[in-house]
Image (cartoon, rainbow, N blue to C red):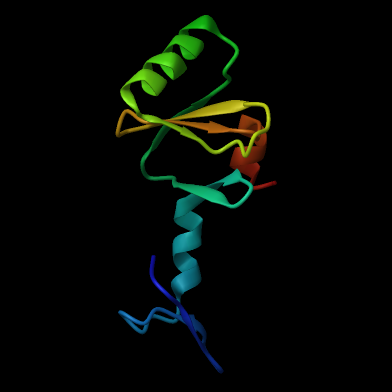
Length: 102
């Protein structure tokens, strides 16, 4: 994680680059809810967890250690399939994920 500094007139800046447009990178992430984010460029699909094939994918990912549970103890309402063969469980519906609501 990088620490950010706040410039009094420019707003947040990155200490490595001095870039005052740090907020620009937030658009490249999707909130999975409850303070977790995933890279939108690495996201392949958002699916509902109800179908049997998706439940099998979740179990297989759990078995090989490629499952990330971002539900914060809540019911899983969507599964994010990443290009790295990882699955991310989210408590938000696919519609809320895409709209940016939490």
